[in-house]
Amino acid sequence: MSNHYLIRKATEGDVLQILKHTKKVISENPNVTGITLNEFTSTLDEEKEWINSHHTQGLLLVAEVNRSIIGLLSFRLSPWKRLCHQGIFEISIQEKFTNKGIGASLIKKLLAWAQANQRVEKISLEVFSNNERAIHLYKRLGFIEEGRLKSHIKLGSNEYVDDVLMSIFIDSS
Image (tube, rainbow, N blue to C red; front, top):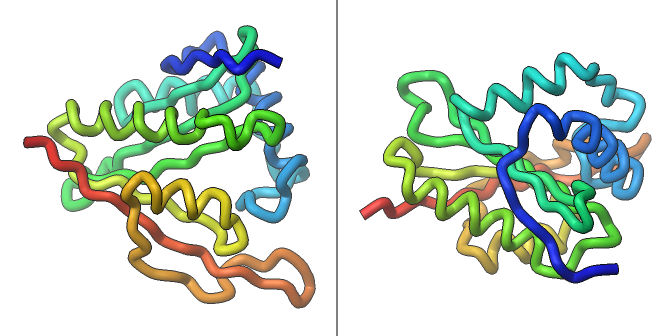
């Protein structure tokens, strides 16, 4: 396996690989994703529309190894006037490619993009409290915990985890 990866903006032509990537990540880590594999039913047209919506409302990045998408970062700005200075991001990396700096690289690209974008003042995320690897990365990159929704995520009949709210403020000076 190559340690070389490429990060670039996603295009509509990535739709099949993005769908495949998302299904793989959900199946590999079902206890840290907000959606189950059975619930992920996005069609090609819906996924293309989602990809294209990032051109005006945010940023969609993919990480590739050997021309295969193995990582994804989606950032969406709020369309509402009082909230449009901020947005939320989601990130996913296939298990085989974790702990190689790819997630950090994707987030650093987002932060650089946000710094250059006058509109973005704050970037937020939600992460399951059992996803210690992700929380460690976010803290290392400067994100702070703003709050928790206690037992917000139900993993099983008697198994709950908190939804951790984290953010970082962008200094565009």
